[in-house]
Image (cartoon, rainbow, N blue to C red; front, top):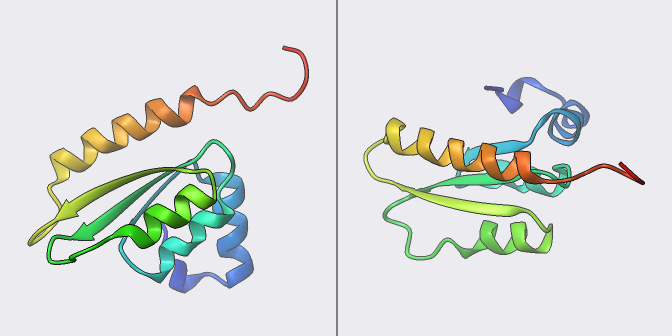
Length: 103
């Protein structure tokens, strides 16, 4: 877990681009970092249940060619449900073949 507020913007971009395969975040501006994710990345957005529409980051993820998984949260995060989604995200991120050239 990383607090981006403690990092410079350059450090944030480097961390997301070089060391992040699964980006999990609460709905908000910080999720725009998904545009810097590597090809083999998955985004899990924690969406407050009172939101009427949560298409912004879904659309941004689609434009960035990233797998997007929303999770509605109400009164706190259901940790068991989140771990299930993380397991799904790990399976998806692990399935990408990012080799260049012949194997």
